[in-house]
Amino acid sequence: MRLNSLGFLLSEAFAGLVRHRLMTLAAISTSAISFTVMGSFLALLFALNAMSSSMLSDLGVAVYMKPNTDRTDTLNTREAISEMPGVASVIIVTKEDAWSRIKRDLGSNVPLEGVKDNPLTDELHVRLVDVDHVAAVSQAAARLNGVDQSKIMSDVVRNVQATVKLLKQLGIAAACLLMIATLAVIANVIRLTVFARRREIHIMQMVGATNGFIRLPFLLEGIIYGVGGAAVAGAIVFHGGQSVLRLIHSTLPFLPINDSVVPANALAIALISSGALVGLLGSAASVRKFLLS
Image 1: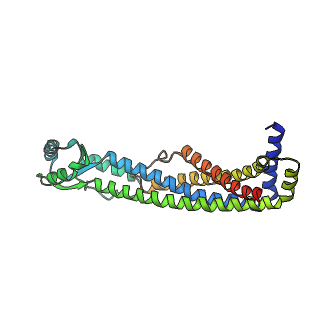
Image 2: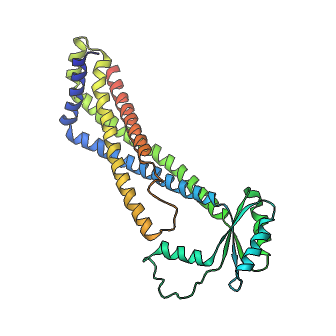
Image 3: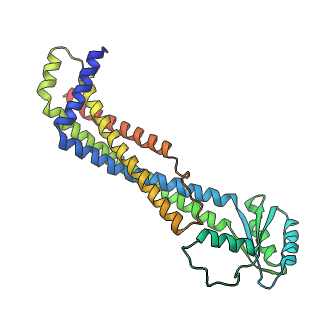
């Protein structure tokens, strides 16, 4: 294809966008709404996956000592748990360290000035070789002298993983429905554009223009509709996500979520690629029906 032909096709595509401004606005707005919902689902799934991965790294048993025990009891308990089958490591979190971390994390969000005495007890984080030993180690640790309670941390992880799985299924279903709706809107806009220019297209056919040459400006319009809406959606998801992360950091600082849990570049590429594909398919379907009729 010569450069002058390419310039003509591009000018025709942009002329079609300007000529049908309201339809262009409707197509881009619809695709932007659809891709915003899809991008929000993807960002949420990335965040939940990061949370579950962080929890999985600490998978094991949390053992809490009784309030009246001293540090010697905690050390003896650690030695006893370390000798149990399936235990990889046992880390002591002293009540002083835990109290300092809570005051640092919560900061001014929770008033702790009135709490004079440390209400916490020593805690032992037990990491296991695999999840098959979780129940046995938890039950054995709970029977040791000086132990107040033993909690299985894997239960929380299972709940988070189940939530992630459910959201993935809902997200896939919602994304498919939204993509179909966006494809239908873009296809209808292109169909109206083709109909409005039917006489011009007939003249081009009479002078020997190929179907591919006639089709390309409309395909470019469809791609612009999809990519434009996806770009708007990407900006909304990015800035909205930053605001949500700041809110989470200020209200729930202990959650393992930071700015890197959502890969912004990968999300933007996925949205724009999906927008280009939806726009191309929608416009191709409309133009093909018209050229075959």
